Length: 382
Image (cartoon, rainbow, N blue to C red; front, side, top):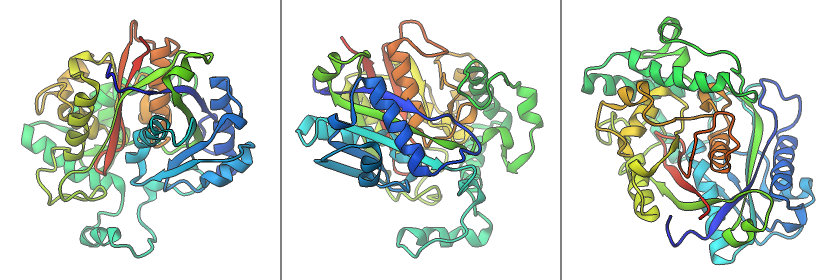
């Protein structure tokens, strides 16, 4: 673990994951925050910092009011959708390390199934410089995240001489873990490679079972100093390294002209910084929690982070050489923009995960890919 590690995740909390929460996104956020504080053995009065996503509809100040939190000395938001997941923890850790705050809550809450569904595609967007990039692809019919990822997936298969069946290994592994997880939407419902191959096309070469769910729910995390976390009820998950990364010419999901689409440049940036910051490498990782909004990007992340060579990730997954997304991931448990993956990493380090990996001491967590992204290396306390 890096000697610079000064912050830790001390609490995790979530609502149930559903397809129709029946309540507001603000209430989901407040429930998750309260649950995380209770898990950490803290109260709203202990909190002086809040971090969330720019896409969240419940501002930090409003959530603080709803939870009975008092004065705040730090509040922040991170852009780029799922790419923000690990960066919220990074922001919290920096606040703690610099003294800007002592106890920071990271949260994400949405009704992404019963409300605004990201999979429905782009229907209306306020004019922005960033949105101009979509103007190059929408006339060609690329209107949804699945269609954008399909472009990169097709290139990946072409470069490495593979067929879409290789993506099935990721889906099968995720659903196997989800089947044993009572919190997962697909609890008790594993799939086979044949099931994957029989699922309908969404945007070739992506099938239905290559695409993550749409979920209503909330997830929150509590970050504080390692020293304070040691005095709290739960074993701390030490933030050994945290990083953000964007590749040259980066866009949101549509950067097809910035280099080889079969390579996740932003993930390579994060990987370099994480391994250097933590003083670790791929061989030191016990569990991988890799952002799995679409199966091809899991394979491409494994290669970008150095777990295997180009085109070799499907074999790594099929052989089970690295436990991946032991909660079932966004494919099997829930789609919470990656925040539930951070919570699973904490459970693995505590030794309380449903699909516990024996002796898990170091976990890699990644955030959304195809967008400016982030990552964490979490470690058990020495």
